[in-house]
Amino acid sequence: MTSLTLSLIKTKANAGITHFTISLLIFCFVVAWVYFFAYPDVYFTMAGAIQGLTLVFLIDVVLGPLLSFLVYNPAKPKKEIISDLVIIGAVQIAALVYGLTTLYKEQPQAVIIYPKSSATVINKREMTDFELGELSQYEKLGKLPAAVYTPDRKHPYQSMLQSLDVIKETDLANRRTLAQNMDDSAVLQSLEKQYGKLYILSVMAKYNGAYFALDEDFNLVAKFGEKPIS
Image (cartoon, rainbow, N blue to C red; front, side, top):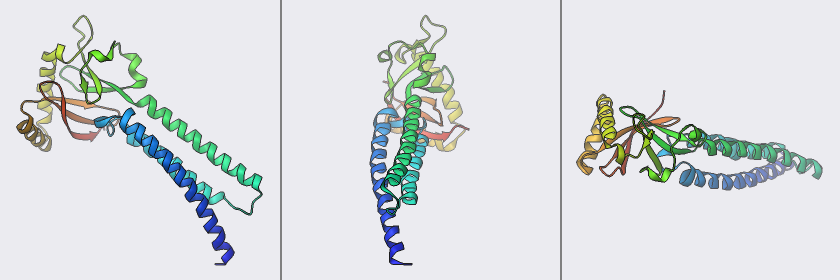
């Protein structure tokens, strides 16, 4: 391998590394927004954050710098170099905007608890389908407001405190399902030794489902038994 070839590879590598560093920095800001704000705490792995971030990472942190490495050549006319980088940047920005838009629309906004059944995480795109009213009236599961679906009452959505009977019935139904899995049963026994009597909710999000354990004040004390939704 000639010194000229080695010099070219080094120059191309420097271009790729520079691009990679910038892309990685932007990606870190995206991860921070997703983890701390858009897909908070227990919902990060359940509601599609990892899948969305993986797409952004592959396109913006991997593919973009790789293309820079492949196409960059200092021997090209400056105008052609700029044109190549602009095209790569445009593709990368378009992919980033698409990824961020998807993450924004799919971010979890509330939890709907259905009597004697599973609770469902509602994303931003779906919120208009539910007449929840002012979200501050509901207790929170983690960082999301949780409404109990009560179609037989004046308002179809109530707070957990207003629907304690429904929560208790749902807890019993979920315990019957949970008892079929020895590992989940063992986790619940351990949690109740530590926290006392708990209410158990089966919560389904876009990608994963899990059990939420709540204390008597409806504080979320643990998430366990998380599994992909088949």
